[in-house]
Length: 262
Image (cartoon, rainbow, N blue to C red; front, side):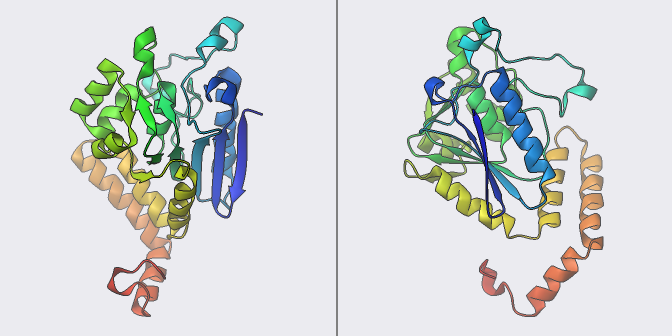
């Protein structure tokens, strides 16, 4: 099985397991990855997903060898009104899920593997992880959100450096660019991602997901539309009673001096 789905407390750990091709994704793997995120979305008992790779590699991108075996990734040309939430060449990369996703990156996250990491909300990377547009060498385009998410995430100048040169970027440089959110010692990315996931799962969920959705929705919206959407989402959270419950906990002594322990 190329994709493993495991639930640990309130976290779903989704693992690409094709070590013989450095976790490159072919068509069946892309379909299985999409199905894993269908499962994540439908399961109310899990609050966060972690996407990672087996055997010390995140993902080497699309499996180019599979193209000659009629198992290559499918690229579907769709209009703007239809493309969001359609299956992407690497699986879930065109969809918008309602809950946070963390990438736990060991080894290479390159080409389509970089696009998978960019699709996630947060990236926890080992110091010796490698990010890069390695497909630059072979005339294979970024076609799964890479040219959009990379500039939005790290700015046009850094993004152009990676996109045009295809050069490898280590964990340390990735953090300086804003590509990696957390750094760990080699072999510790999944453990650190699990700690981060548990923290996110412990927050009031409606409020966190509402704020996350507003941050996603604002791209491409005029300021007035974005502000109105933020208020609409925020008021739905307030009306749900979650805000009042949190304020009551604070008034009873929780969270004093900025602590996150209670």
